[in-house]
Image (cartoon, rainbow, N blue to C red; front, side, top):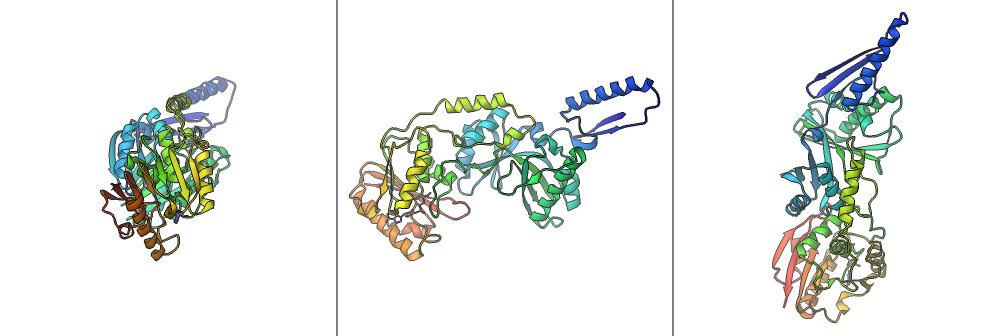
Length: 438
Ligand SMILES: C[S@@+](CC[C@H](N)C(=O)[O-])C[C@H]1O[C@@H](n2cnc3c(N)ncnc32)[C@H](O)[C@@H]1O
């Protein structure tokens, strides 16, 4: 056997060749060659099962400790602030997200605690990419066996733009998939399967203006999936948006928080989590960062235990939810009850807000129907007008935060907002207005 290893820039090539053994004298030499190869493989963190190939010696995130946090449109500023609060360094905005530098501990903490971030990607390689063939060749230089086994499943999410050689995202994704399968076939004789809906590993390809980045999803699926919203109603709000609204309301539990059109209760669930210092990922299982070759379980347990140690219970009756639809009220109850430390610590019942006699000295957060997905526009406008009358006439001493589908709809409230801010709801437009009610 002859083992040749060569480091050229960021890649390492190695070839193990089995040659004819002519006499016993070769046996010792063969064993020492084999041991040398094993040791070198260990140094370079390459499983020795590889017989030949050219792989990247280090991944991009390992060289620079740099990651990318994806953010939904509208609350970039808040999300950037959150990243910094959780320990991210060199936070730099880019299209739909932020590049940042983090230690493994900070990476785990961000995934576990961030409320407004959609996912964190670990870039493996960034390169000039003009053609599908070059994409395939480069993806072949990633030793995918370091991230998953043949028994695990993967999915590729590809976005391509302004790249004449790669105009179809699906086709680009297919090329990366082919490369992953071929790397596995070469080494193991088998390949892992694709599961587009619920993969063990998420792989992201982003190509823009002939420049491509292949990344691993360290979050293990979108972070908005907190795990509490098992009961759903029509037109629920994205959890990341609800978290941003709660944060903008600056509510910290000093007085009750009321959602009189609670739907599935997303706003109150996010408020409860925030009040209880419950990490946003507390109910989640399966983290993408556990598939990174340098994942450190001790560091993860430290980050998790530290975050969990701050948790506290929700005091009784700080949260008040109601909805005209009994099914929605039940959904709110069920979802809030899924949060540890919150079980039945809140009021929740079916009620038409127009029948509420009065509210005094509370904070109101609410999200009336958009008139887009629920009912029609005229009904939505009429309801916003009635909500405005309710706020004006029967909510003295309260502060209200109303999230509506657009600025024209919000105007129907008929009150002058202290401020308005555009915030996307899972790709749909929306606007939040703050009202001080005297
Ligand atoms: C857009 S949904 C709220 C979604 C909620 N934020 C969530 O995340 O699930 C609007 C809710 O307003 C409720 N609603 C409509 N008219 C109402 C009324 N007059 N009184 C109370 N609730 C009402 C609907 O039943 C619906 O659940």
